[in-house]
Figure 1 (cartoon, rainbow, N blue to C red):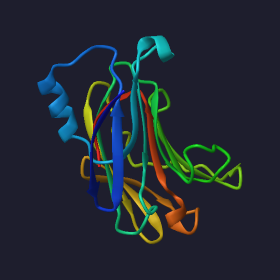
Figure 2 (figure 1 turned 60 degrees about the horizontal axis):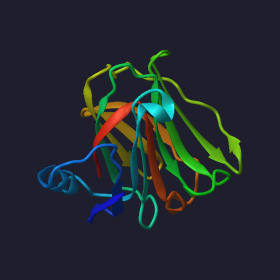
Figure 3 (figure 1 turned 90 degrees about the horizontal axis):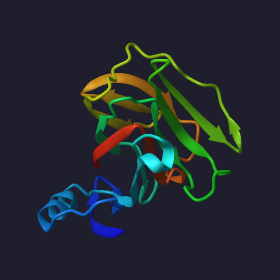
Length: 188
């Protein structure tokens, strides 16, 4: 794994590690270094891993989630997507810990499901959305705005949905995980 640069952005500090199955020139590595804004671990899974190209990213939210914090995810949907997930975790190393938000995009159902896990128990799923905005092969920009009572989710500048905080206090949410049938270009 090649360690890349790190920097501070709006209270979220993340450090990327990048793993490749093929080599890059020095110029390509430098270009990728400039995109790094969060601290975490990034891995591109190959076809041998899951039968499709899948990205996995996990990063630390330094100091925990706070009102007025914004997380930006920019990427490209794979050509034959099944799903992808954005998860706000209390502890990325212990699955029994609380999950502040699991946002799952399912292409076959054309749904965006939101839920949280507290004390090992999942709450009520939320699925209502005004439209299904994702298309195979398209780029997207997803923004998660943390407010005092909820997280607002915007897609390409348009409000998509929201999720009322269930994990309290918010600073217990300390990690961001992204996985699924997408190719990430920026996480900030």
